[in-house]
Length: 116
Length: 112
Image 1 (cartoon, rainbow over the protein chains, first blue to last red):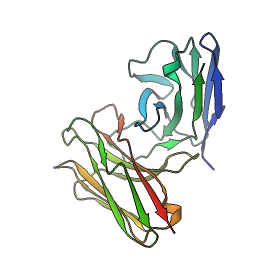
Image 2: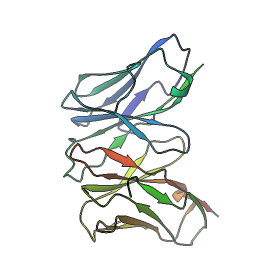
Image 3: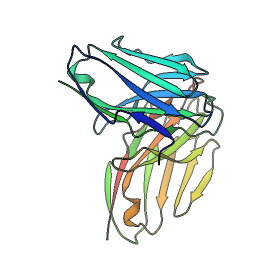
């Protein structure tokens, strides 16, 4: 069982829809991440929240809007997506975002998103 | 090297055989190297986080080495079992923001 829970597992939406992806962890981790992964490609970092504040936005289009309501929850709000946004979206968490540490990231199972 | 590269892309191993594969990463501004195992329909699972040149880590039949000066890491699987079938991802941190840069993975298939 994964300690990072993502919902929904699958999502099909039209280009005009608004939907949200949800990620939850109860390990007391203070850094949370969103990644996008296309088939046969490496996961690509989208956003990083550190202590509930957005610390990294990897030039992600504004149709993706992250939100971190508290230290356990991370949302990704979706609006007016394009077919090329179809991908697996992974959430992860770590104790802190300290690059000098030896903390692994803990991943959820991902949300498989399809844009019609 | 500017990106993280893994080779081979895939490999087939007979049960009981040992195998190894490579992760190459930028050697400048190195902070850490991560290895993850990703089974189909599951979440990536952390295997190792390595930070020091010459580091060697072991978890059961799986071990990893790290050379930060030349920018590579090897992952070894000893006596492969069918449950070792997975994609093995490596990722390096080479900036002060702590961003993980992933390779595309090595898909390992162990056949009985």
